[in-house]
Image (tube, rainbow, N blue to C red):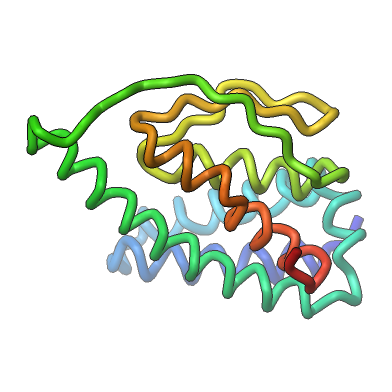
Length: 165
């Protein structure tokens, strides 16, 4: 058990808690401390193997942070598109389920890709299997076409390998 790592994680989570709540009341501080340590400990227990795989690889962490910024921008663009489709009856809403085969072989990149698809408005990963086949619900044909351009998969590949296809 790596207590220094758990304490560092808990401290980071506690600071994040303070920023989000903006309260220095005793009960808030106590609840923040307890929750931070529970989450840090639980994450360490559940993600022990995955965390140890990332050791010595700060480049992945930097690329992941840059990926999150890029993903947030894509999510904002998709939010605008979905809102326009809902508010403008002339824009088509053509729900469809598409099959998408990703070329990522490892579980972690596949999971990041599936979750990123689901986080992006207009698309929802319904099923993902070990072979890399995803079933994805798309709100409109544009969303399916954007998905098939594989920009999202290329970015996930970049996060884990440092290269884009």
